[in-house]
Length: 95
Image 1 (cartoon, rainbow, N blue to C red):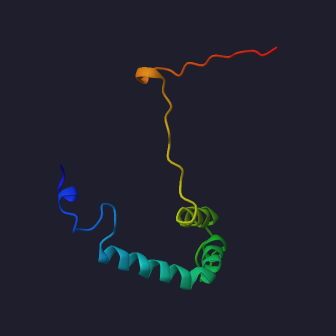
Image 2 (image 1 turned 120 degrees about the horizontal axis):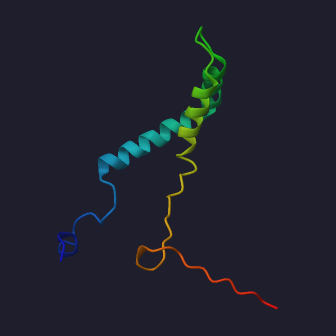
Image 3 (image 1 turned 30 degrees about the vertical axis):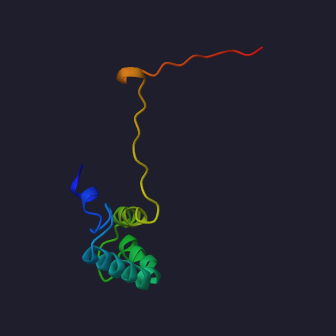
């Protein structure tokens, strides 16, 4: 029996501690307060602002990195057959 099941007075498994929750809340507030500036920042990077060279590839990379927090990446799933062997398929024709 693990310690978590023996001590039901502790934090539930998987719940963030107070510091983690506070940091996540602060980051969410920062993102919410600056969402209106995001398009401008990406455009500045893509087109070059304040004498900097235009870098559309960097702007696209920044956008893709940021969008991961809104639309998470899908986990890769491997499908195998019995005993990690190949997947066997049976095709049946209907008449």
